Image (cartoon, rainbow, N blue to C red; front, side, top):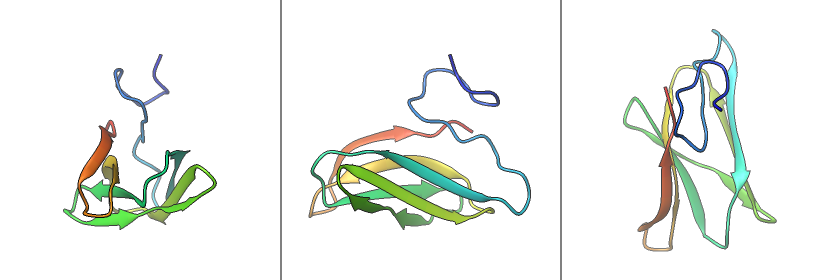
Length: 84
């Protein structure tokens, strides 16, 4: 079952936030050096990683498209799309 405002079949979902809201993404991660978030304006953000968790936030405006864990050469280890 998907959260309200989300389509099914995704592991994480971010319905469009209300105006002026911050967007936050938090999740579990294995031993990887970086987790990145791609946005609908062709930019990337990096999450903070500690104790098996990752977290990132950004001001509303850019909508997240995907979350990816990458190795030290920026090769994607795992990724998943974010539902609109």
